[in-house]
Image (tube, rainbow, N blue to C red; front, side, top):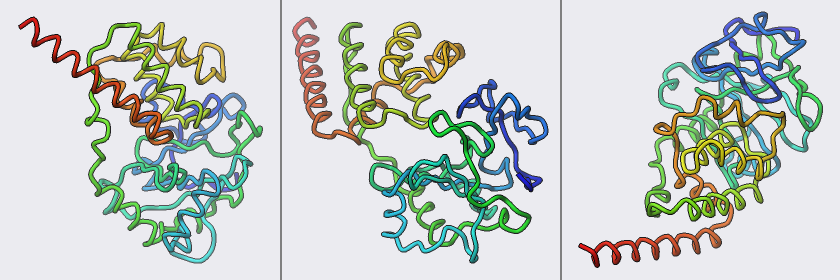
Length: 293
C-alpha cells in the first residue's frame, strides 16, 4: 500500500475476523499491526474520519444501485479506494461521509437479498494485504491516494442511506412470539431456523455470524450452541466457537426471534408454517393455563 490516510484506524484480524476483546474500541494505526502474522481490518465510522465502506456482494447489488439511479458512489469523477476478494462482481469502496451525518447513520443492508451493505460505526472491513479464506488474499483495484481517500459519498447514495435509517424497523419478529419451550423443542426450533439460514447463506458476514451464534447460546447454552453452530457453519479455524462464546453474556444476547427474522427473509413460505405452529403452541398454552387457574 503506497499511502495510508492519517486518520484511518485499524484492528488486527485472524482470517477475516477481529480477535481482540472489545476491538471496536481499540483502534490501531497500521504500524501497530504485525502484517506478517495478522490481516488488517479498517475500522469504519467516525473513528476513521467518517470513512464508510460500500460493500457490493455480487450482481444484485450493482443492479439495485442502477435501479435507484445512482451513477457514481462518490461526488466527483474518478475512483475512490476500491478493493476486492477476487470473487465475481464483489468489492468494497471507501467513501467519506460529511460530519453532520455521523450520528445519524447506521450500517444497513439494502436491495434484493440484502446484497448491498453500507458499513459504518461498529463494523470493520478486511483490506489488502489481508488473507481471504477462499481466494487467497484481498487486492486493491484502486489504491488509496492523498486525493481519492477524501472523496465524499455521492448525494444520491447518501440520500438512499439516510432514508433507510429513517424507516421504522419492521415488527416482523415481535409479531411472532414463541412460548417458553421444553429444551428438546427449543433445540429443534433453533436447528430448523439455522438450517434455513445456512441453506441460503452458507458463509454469513461477521456481524450476522455473531448474532446467530449468540442467539444459539442464549437459547441452548454455550455447549449446545457450539455444536449447533459447527453443524451449520463449520469452523474456519479449530476452537473458533470456543473463543467466540468465552465472553458471551446471555442477558445481552438476541433471541430466537432474530433467527426467525433472518430465516423468513430467505424462505418466507417455510417460516410461515413455523409461525402458524408457534401461534398454535401459544393457543394451547393459554388453554392449558386457563384450565388450571
